[in-house]
Amino acid sequence: MQPRTVHVVSLGCPKNRVDTELMVGGLASAGLEMVAEPDAADVLLVNTCAFIEASKVESVDAILELAEVKERNPTAKLVVAGCLSQRHAPELRAEMPEVDYFIGTGEYQRLLDVLALEPTRSAEAFARGDKKGRPEYIADHLEPRWIAGGSFSNYLKIAEGCSQGCSFCIIPKLRGRQRSRSVEDCVAEAHRLVEQGTVEICLVAQDLTHYGEDLGEPEALARLVRELGKVDGLRWVRLMYAYPHNFTPALVAAMAETDNCCKYVDMPLQHCSDQVLQRMNRRTSRQEMETLLHELRRAMPDIVLRTTLLVGHPGETEEDFLDLVRFVEQWRFDHMGAFAYSQEEGTASARQEDQVAAAVKRYRQKTLLDVQRKIAKARNAARVGKTLPVLVHGLSEETDLLLEGRHAGQAPEIDGVVYINDAPDDIGRGQIRMVEITEAHEYDLVGHVVA
Image (cartoon, rainbow, N blue to C red; front, side):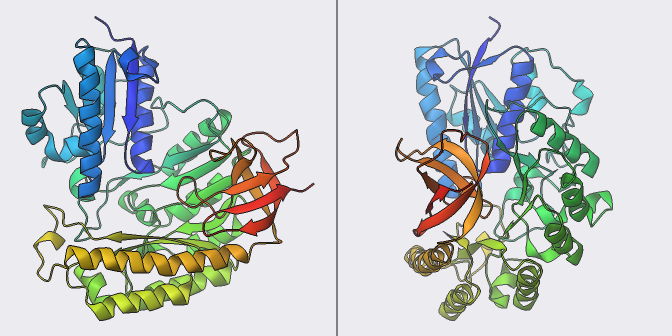
């Protein structure tokens, strides 16, 4: 029987979400309809994550939940896609016979093949992989992409894979080497997204700041930022996963000089101790990171900085950790995530000596987050009395009495929100309105719309 409906579960990061939208776009172009209820679906698709152990557990749980649906509807096809399939398909195939198909990270075309659906583009557009079996495929702006109705904020994935080789990270084995799209192709997709109602684009990649190096254009990201500044109707452009080791002066200038580029950057620093950074095989020293942070704040005094830090990496001493705490207290990041190191099979860090005890990792993570919580509350308190542009989402998830949105220093899903009191009747989803901030909390703000 020809499948007609599909139910999708998408796990993991925004980059994975883009993959899901591309897979669903391909299915939709072949005539399938998205359904919210899994029991109504002919195809059950889960796009998995396998970055750390916790994400693998979440992915397996999602597969098992859909397997229960398949028991009630044996004619449905269960498809497991993404990183978990790329990493563990042979073992999963043996342990989960209820799964019909496993699709790796660079095999979207197989999804149409195995379901006997007619693709909308030539199969020549899809590479099967390199000689070592690593995925080599990357989508372009011509690929059909399913965007949820009314979505005004979307991700634009400008590169796939990673060539950096951080010792704790499994991504290069899951996603292959870095391969960038051209600036022109990314701009073409931005135009298409704006035509569909997008007002905010978040640029994402496994390694954003090395975008274009594989194409022989090391300043491609700076050029892309400036070109996106020319796209009519695109109000906000946001940089995510922008690693420090190739954050060039040209990129700083492009951010500062491009009106629709949010003065915001998500820069995963991971640590500040040079000996820990070396064991992580990171390509930046503390001095280089601090020089860059100084330059960003000099060029854009109101810039909002988000970072991600990793505690408990093999060899991290108590003094290394205390130095990291002092680093956070010194730089006072607006937003910060802290994660406990996960010993992942197949990574160089997993084989290193001096593994840190699990209880110590949890303690260090909690301590760092407690420090950041006070900093974030103080940073938010400094915004009380200011008037900020806020992208309106609609009714708050907490209460129907408030609207909810984000100012330019809040990325979707990770940085908190702005609650809007006494909203005027003419306010609508996707609008950017000026909001005076009247209250501040640890992560969220409260305000009212001004003329």
